Amino acid sequence: MRSLETLTVHGLGQVAEPYRDIVPPIHLATTFERAADGSYPGGRLYARDGSPAYIEAEEVLRQLEGGTQALLFASGHAAATAVLQALDAGERVVAPHSMYWALRKWLLDRAEHGHIQLAFYDNADLDGLRAQLAAAPTRLLWIETPANPTWEVTDIRAAVALAREHGAMTVVDSTVATPVLCQPLALGADIVMHSATKYLNGHSDVVAGALATREDSPLWQRIRAMRNLGGGILGPFEAWLLLRGMRTLHLRVRAACANALRLATELEAHPAISQVLYPGLPSHPGHAVAAAQMSGGFGGMLSIRLKDGEAKARDVAARVQVFKRATSLGSVESLIEHRASVEGEGTRCPPDLLRLSVGIEPADDLLADLRQALAG
Image (cartoon, rainbow, N blue to C red; front, top):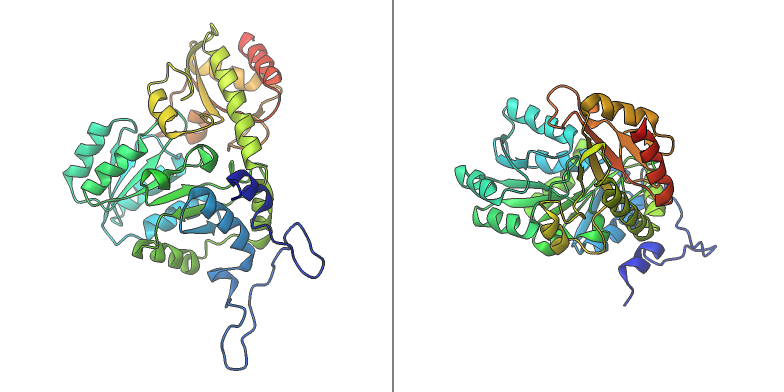
């Protein structure tokens, strides 16, 4: 039986006739011919409801996550919102305080306009989560772990058990963990979501999203319909690029994990830093849970808080030379961002915090860059 690493490198292992291409061709067609009797011998009607360009990337992700089906979307945000739009009007969602900022804003807007009921819980507080689930009938529990940008860790198995006890389904945003480090479906989650823009693609040249499901539920069929009817589909070339990026997923994630752990360990003692937030550190409050549900590393994301506050944080970001000052995460190059100023009014991110997406450059280069920026 092939390993998941080999699966990811080779995709489905198919070669295309007549030239025996080892790289899959790009399927650009938007529509497909019917037979004389009106049937579809090629199994396809129109690209919006299922382009053949998606087949390999969706199947690789399905197998990586151990799910029954997977779907690609135009962005991570499109994937996430398709789940929530598939709910019935007025159903209740319980979401974490620390989560992707744009989705949090979208949830608040949906709640304000009466489309959903919404409650929040502290990511690592199972007692608080239990109370929120018990407070009112809940349709969906949303989990993000490790959680952007402060990297709290939620115990997926325990949270799923609480959700089931109260009749709720669970969706896990596993963008940062990736299927290399964690498989939420194996821990009981119903659906796992990825911003495939990040680690799955890994080259800062594709915006994409993905979902994988543990079983073919009525909610999953509504999500599939939302992709079709809502039009949040991925282009064929972007699907091809995503599959290309996934071929090096394991190597990139493991390199980023090793670099992030090295940086976190050495920066924890730096005199200008008040706190390093990284689940791989024994000092992190969620370290034990992360070690239990993540295998092979703790991710490539960490944040540092500066003793001298926001002004120092902005100054450090301005002085870096190897790190790039840019939004996003999970690519081969290292990025740094003063997240609070990017999120703007209403942010929950501490103003003294810098978020680091650690890439695959030599760790010595990254440490030297941060040290010279911190010394300024």
